[in-house]
Image (cartoon, rainbow, N blue to C red; front, side, top):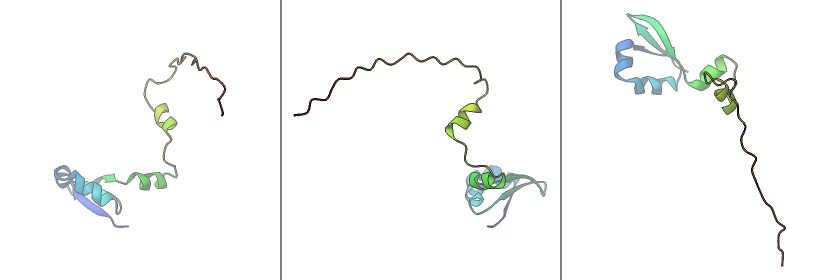
Length: 86
């Protein structure tokens, strides 16, 4: 794992390079020579906070205003018949 440093100006000019560097390890983004932000690969972040990748349900629960939404889908009218085997 290697640590990379980008100035704010370099980060703004080439975000893709910072994203590629984050695959190898954390990327520190400096502001006036001092670390101001850190860019991590999402897997590294989940490992750091000891959390697994969120499920689809977790993501849906995180949508603002999504609480107390009534959901009453109509009942499906499915008609079945016996299979005709010869």
